[in-house]
Image (cartoon, rainbow, N blue to C red; front, side):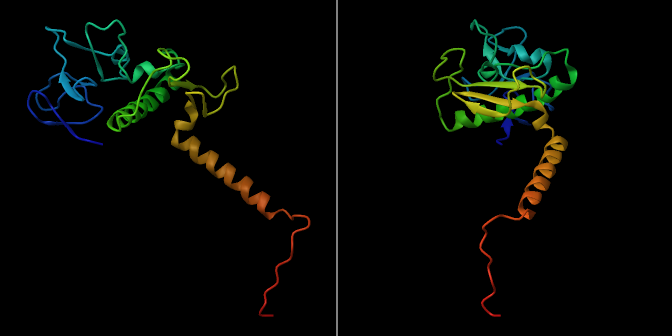
Length: 187
């Protein structure tokens, strides 16, 4: 990922930063400048996305916009509630990864339209808990990307990998009917 520079002091800042560690300026990523900008409490040209208040986003919107969610956050469909602290933290990690994805899609100049603006051609992300009432699983269909939050946990992923691997090994060990017997030609 690209290392950015503070717009005030030119010190390196990273994609997740919202403060320059050198000059303590408030910074945020702007899709309009495709770079980090100063977030000034006095002039209010750019303000943080609504999700900044929950320590989830460091992107900015123009103060004149009616939608106070940044481009990356506007793709969110279902997310866990703030009160669900365990799953909210898992979503927070996934949301940071989604911001990186949106940034990369912008770099590639691919069209990005949230489903909230175009139900047919738009894109949306649902982040669900494992025991969701609709029994949905991780996958995608018609522009809706669904992710079970447990699958973002490296420990859970490793447990699932081992479980699936053992199932795969068990099925390979089972005899198969009508399988031709291969003989070694050197015998």
